[in-house]
Structures are given as structure tokens and as C-alpha cells.
Image (cartoon, rainbow, N blue to C red; front, side, top):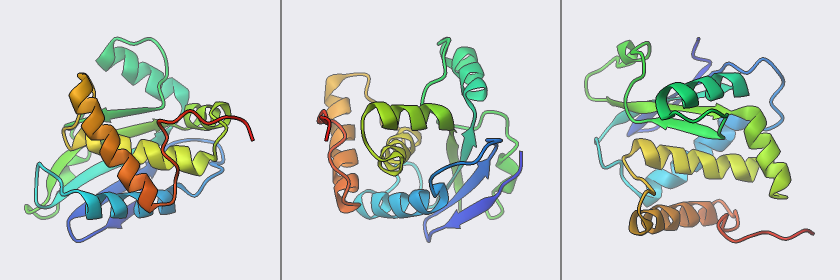
Length: 175
């Protein structure tokens, strides 16, 4: 896999690779950039002053396989977040020691597109939500118990609001 793009901020580098063979119908790079920028203005990474992470855009098969292998779940989900490195292929990229590698995020593009359609919302908005959600996971947030889920959702809602995206936890109706 190759890195197509590095998004750089003062406090973080994001290595983005597109491993999805088909056309992607949304501008994922600019969405990642905008969304992470707002997230960083809302919240500091609790793990490190300066951090790096990778994001891959992949197909359902890839995500299905990883979900089964690491989570024991036999289906493709929208996004998987791995808090540390899976296979160290990216670990060598820590060009300078001040950046801490905090994790890998893998999106299943068709699932993201399909869910947006089902939820009757622009794919850009759904993807932005998943970006915030997955980065919070590699920051160490979780939603296993209700209290933590609430904290996580509050941050997501706040960041998305700054991007003028409606609260994703309120059911949207047609129209």
C-alpha cells in the first residue's frame, strides 16, 4: 500500500492512502483535513502532544476480513479504528521522534456510501462524522458504557456543528 497524501498540521500528520479500486464520489482528502482541523480545535490528543495516524480507504472485503480477524465480527463495518499499529508498515514513517504514532483507521467506502443513502444524508456529512468518530477512538475514547458514549457523542456533535453538519444522533426523516 502506498501513501497518497500526507495531511500536516502543527500537532499531527495524517497519512492517507486510497486502496479502493473504484472512483470515490466525495472529496475525502478535504473532508479529512477540515474535520480533523475542527476536532483539534475542540480537543487536544490525550495521548501525545504531537501524533501521527494513518487512514486508508478500502473496499468491503478488506474491512470484512480485518473485522473478522481482529473483532470476531463476520461482516464489513463502516470504519475500523486500531489504536496502535497493526503491522508496523507505517511505524517507520515516524521521521522525527517528536511524533507519536497512535493508530490506523480503515474505511469501507461502499458501506459508507450505502449508509449515507439509507440515512438520507450527503455522503460527505456521513464521512465527516466517521472521521471524527474514528479519530476519537484512536485518541482512546470508547462507547462501551453509556457515560463514555455520551462524552464521545458530545464531542462529535460539537465538531460537526462547527462544520455546519446536523447532529447525526437525531433520526433524520425524509425530505
